[in-house]
Figure 1: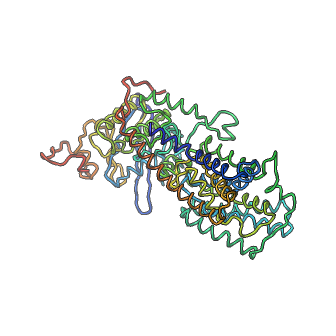
Figure 2 (figure 1 turned 90 degrees about the horizontal axis):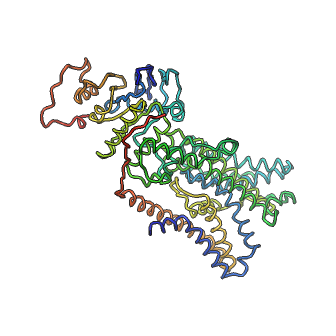
Length: 273
Length: 338
């Protein structure tokens, strides 16, 4: 993956909810095939940033550039049209629709010609066909695609939500806490999946509270604290305790060279968050 | 095996209940299973049925419209007053339709855009729209609309009553929207998982707004048909119609909580109510009992809804426990994305 121009660039994104300044001038660049871990304590602005990038909320100031072109996301469909897909923490699946219906929800394929344009006639056969080939390409094995999502297990639902995000050949995939509700085995599958996306040249923004997961898959780590970006750098020399220090503001004056290992029996990093 | 049977019963049970009902009345009354009486049943259900088409879409989307009966009377008396004022048939029809549609716009704006409670707003409409009709007419009935207008409610085309043709057209258009356009899954998504639908950019406000407008329009069409049938527009038009509409929808298997249902089920549910009422008359059951029967049918429909949800849960938990590879497998060779 050549270190070319960034696929996604944020310039001075600010967003306030009334008196609460959720984001204050956050800038960053993300390239193809790069996995960026986005971390921060509760209230740091992670969710707001995800909302802005997914089109669910609009920023007050700043610019979002996709492939160097400024984009304005008025709705989630705008963000999706620009190639930014989000896997929401709550998965955003409609349980009473089948797998195909969920994959195409909000951008259903219509028939070619007049029946599609004027009668909005769905091309169900094409949707089934393309969803099937997309799942095959992604290496995801699922029950029959006409199965209702309500009938799927948690791991299968996660697979549908992720597949929906990547099946379109999107440029950027945002995963908001994708492992929070999963067991060990499913978590492993999601992490492997992120690594696969990276190899396929997709830019991934991975939001998580779990430092081990972040350290395992992220190339670069972006730390938000109280709405500001307080760290943006390669994962390489970072450890879990250092990340926690960045998140909590313990290292407001810069990261110390070395960090004392936690005393034996100390809290797990995850629990410390 | 049992599971498949239950699923099949859930999908087709109402149809067979309808068949049993027809057979029962056929055996009980000589006049029930005649072409003329079937035409009467269809004519009787056509107004309720055409209002139930947008009504079912609202319930599927997690909303409800209890004001349909009162919008019907509002459309009818607006038409009647316009005729009385010598505005001409065409203008009067348009005004009647506009009155009902305007009430639908009001419902849609308050509920879908401003997030008012659907039940409270349309319950207000149930009282308010009829009250407005009474205010306008002082309770008097307008009548004598002429032979041309009478065709709408009493005419026949190819031996089938005109209202049935109108119902058929509305139902087919509704079935197209429900089953063949993106609106169908969008309604189910809004009704079954509104936050998810919103996160995906589905128009969770605009779509229900237009459904309320359509419900208002359909109700005023119903009001005009009733006015034509009676050759008069009275403030007692469409009393209790919201119950018939809702009973047809719920009996048809549309979940009151939204997200699930079939428009063909609503068709069978509506005809079931019509055939039940008609058949009870044929076998000389007291007309007072007919209202009781509709009420019983509604409660049964609510019970069936709970039963269906239980069945869903049993079925889903069965499948979720399926040990065969419940998690997605990641293939070994990654292929390049295009």
